[in-house]
Image 1 (cartoon, rainbow, N blue to C red):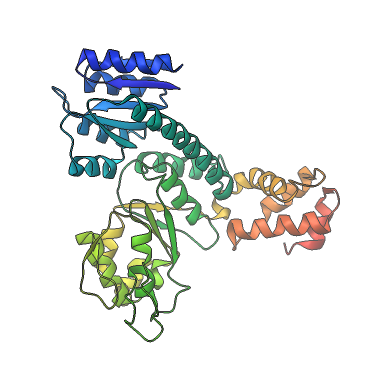
Image 2: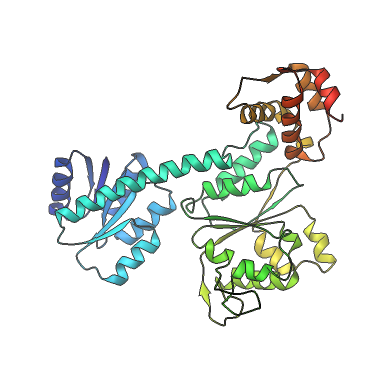
Length: 381
């Protein structure tokens, strides 16, 4: 493992370096927080040991900056003046562990072993997320380049984002990319389809309920806001949410706390909200169906996802992507250039979802190399 030790006491730095080097690790040291941050920015470390009480920039500030910068290393805080409150604060801020001085050799080695496993799990988790969610958005067209640039700027912040676009255009994928590229990526991404939940259940689904709060509440239930604590809550089709639920969502965004149905107790939550809709919310506000104050709370950043008809240059790449998806465990298949050209000329009211279905259909019914005639036979042009 590659390890960084940040401590303004030379004796502690040298002692930790000696112990960890004897265990076969590569160890760098920094004499203050600023130097440590600079090294962490340039080098890839598996673990970082950081003292809390340091002259100049203290360890808590270093921890905040490491987390904000998205450094993947397991950060272990060390202090000679530690107490339970300090340890808890460190863990809440994103530290992997907290060790008190004088340093115990066995504790250090056990912490390092656990840190190694944690770093491996984080890497594996990120790989799985890319595989499951399709982290790479397909397409090199100008509209897609603009969206990638916007995500790159917005994701590292906690700014709320409103994603607009037609059904099937890829709004959820944009939301997942925002989460994956944020400092919250190791925490939950929780999705709520507001259009799919009956209006009488939406408040329980979002905010939870206490046992006995209504007839079918046979046990306590944590809502989606609590489930997403520390991570991202994706409110899909928010334009279909009832006005009563909108009022409660607005309160959570303003006060960062909620109360479950059937309870007066406030629960604090730290959630980044990303919302999406296929509706014209300005028109919904004029009709009295959507709260204007909630709209302004949600739309700190607006991202409009283009329809497939607005990015037809991406169709060949999308076809290749879907072909690989559907033929992963079978014989290689492909589309002829003429077939691809025909599909580029077609209008796509169902957007990427429709193209996905069409590619699947042509792979089942068409020739090994899908031809233009196959497209004419099996696709409504």
